[in-house]
Amino acid sequence: MSGRLAELTGPGVAKNLGPDSVVLLPVGAIEQHGPHLPMSVDAVIAEEVANALLGSVGNEVDLWLLPTLSFSKSDEHAWSPGTLWLAGDTLTRVLSDLARCVASTGARRFVFLNGHGGNSSLLVTACRNIRLEYGLLTFLVHPFVPPAAGGPSTEEELGFGIHGGLQETALFAHLRPDEVDMDQARRNVPEWMADNCSVRFGGPVQFGWTSRDFGPDGHIGDPTGATVELGRRLFVKVVDTLVDQIREIAKFEFPDAAPVASGI
Ligand SMILES: [Zn+2]
Image (cartoon, rainbow, N blue to C red; front, side, top):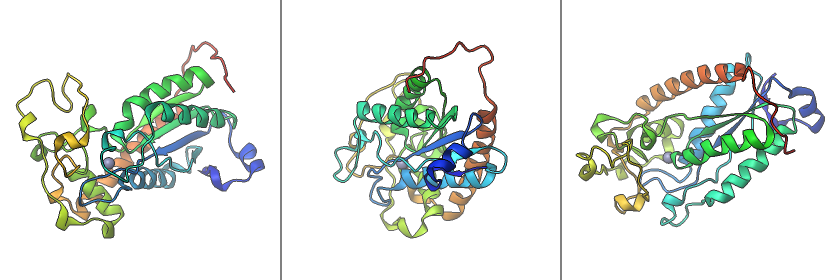
């Protein structure tokens, strides 16, 4: 059986969750996404992808969704009022506390489905922290690998469509067509970085940045070509990919793991 943990009763959790359960936390964000998108984009995408996963593999994987964590590490957008962000150490603590609760259910697999690229490196660290603290098998999956972390972005955006660009805008338009203002969509691609071999998104040199470093609009990419149809195709592809990943996660074991201290 699969479902949403929050909809179970207390005894229902004990009855339904166990060693084969995969508990999945959608991690979103409430942060500025430029003039054409609402603050909720990452939270909506993470949650809708999680819902679709439950619909697709819920009959074969013992998958349990947690409520979406909508506040996360969005400090690269802190300059934009209304962005609701947690400091990195706060989020690390929140994830550890939630992992302790997950471990108490008897489930052994805990997955972060991350819709906000700014969380990625922290979530990698959290995966190891939680493995050490509670012995859980931990995993990080993305609807898209963020271009800033080497994931794909379109050629038209020079590989820099990392925030509110073509793909994210299209995906959101598929999910919430009435909430996108395409009249406000404009190209904001950092052409000045295009000739850099090293210091660039996805390049071998990491660099600190805020979205305001790329101009006052706040998005980075070119959303002007985004359509609902493109978003629909992307959504199908994203869900198909994640279905395969969740199937593999559900079977993943370390064959010779030493017992890990339980911090529960
Ligand atoms: Zn986003």
